[in-house]
Length: 158
Ligand SMILES: Cc1cc2nc3c(=O)[nH]c(=O)nc-3n(C[C@H](O)[C@H](O)[C@H](O)COP(=O)(O)O)c2cc1C
Image (cartoon, rainbow, N blue to C red; front, side, top):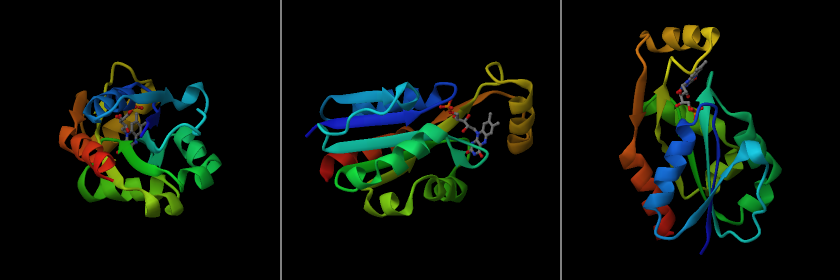
């Protein structure tokens, strides 16, 4: 069984999570940044798709990848994840609105991997918005390692 992890990121947190996820899988996985283009899915049995959330929406390359490849993806074992600062019910809602319903229905694993706010990397407007969302101007980073492990286990077991 061969596995592909594709992700869409702006500042690199989702890439970091994709790399940690790859280490948790029991076989070597290929990792692809969707801003470099769409990989050929032909050789893969399992596909894991992830992206970060901005203003409630998953980054466009992840959205586009899902809609462009929906029919092929529905025939594979699919795992889905998001990265964002929301957790609990808010994160779950964001996840459910980030992917097409048809994909959510067949996915064997769906997780939120946490998020990072690095104010040093952001422009003025982003800093302003994030400060409003979080109520803090402190940079923060939270990787939900347990959720990464769980997604990896679910991909292994199915
Ligand atoms: C302008 C802006 C808006 C954001 N909106 C959300 C949001 O709606 N929900 C959320 O959970 N996180 C939100 N975030 C936090 C990002 O999802 C988080 O920083 C994530 O880790 C970024 O990952 P990336 O570096 O892979 O792009 C926002 C961040 C910025 C800068």
